[in-house]
Amino acid sequence: MTPIAKLRLGVNIDHVATLRNARGSVWPDPLRAALLAEASGADGITAHLREDRRHIRDADMDALRAGIGIPLNFECAATDEMAAIILRLKPHAVCLVPERREERTTEGGLDVAGDENRLAHYIAPLRDAGCRVSMFIGHAPRQIEASARIGAAVVELHTGHYSDLHAEGRLDEAEAELEALRQGAALAHSLGLEVHAGHGLTYDNVAPVAAIPQVVELNIGHFLIGEAVFVGLSAAIDEMRRRMDAARG
Ligand code: PXP
Image (cartoon, rainbow, N blue to C red; front, side):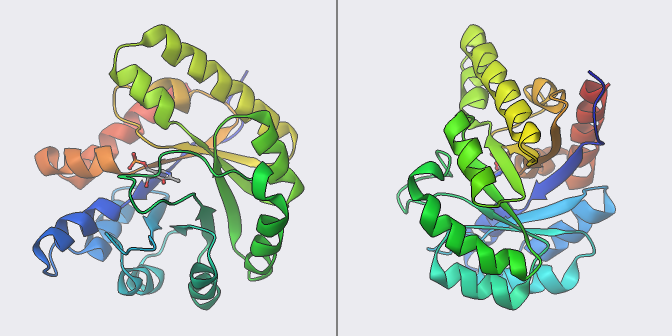
């Protein structure tokens, strides 16, 4: 099957803020990283405003919204506090994720099927404000179908489990997980949803995900920011893009 669209790269800059906050100072500046990512060919910037503000803070979101020229993807939990901030900033996109204070990163997908009514009401005003609303979910068909029913524009498929299996060398299981992601992407696309993917992607594991034809955007953060320590952010983005494009064929 020929790829149906160019694959976009969204760069998640949360961990620039993690590094800044480790020293309680103002360096490194997440906006500067976002502008450099933009200049290096990123198609969008993702930032996650967590309830505990452990990395990105409110002022970062304001600065990103005002400062970047590419789409801002505002990642957050579906809370009233976040809805108020989103309606004030009106970012291009909103990605809703589950959030637990004690987790190190977003560990699982959102249970859209189990919270369908509340989420349908939650996203309606965000959509009316012009935001493209995305659900960060696993590949289970019931989560994909529920996302379509509530009127989400996008689903972002969680690639964290695939990435973990790949990193542990459990390649048969990683392949099975990939196959489930492929089927999930095809189902989502058939229901009219735009399909994104992300979490845990690296140079070594990105190719098979980039090759899924219905996936039109990858959101990548931790690996790129880590790699930037060694080669710089621009070179890290270049190399990731090269691998994504090569896999896309
Ligand atoms: N997409 C979503 C919805 C996420 O929560 C994250 C992690 O913040 C990412 C993509 C990027 O994951 P990683 O930092 O592992 O590349």
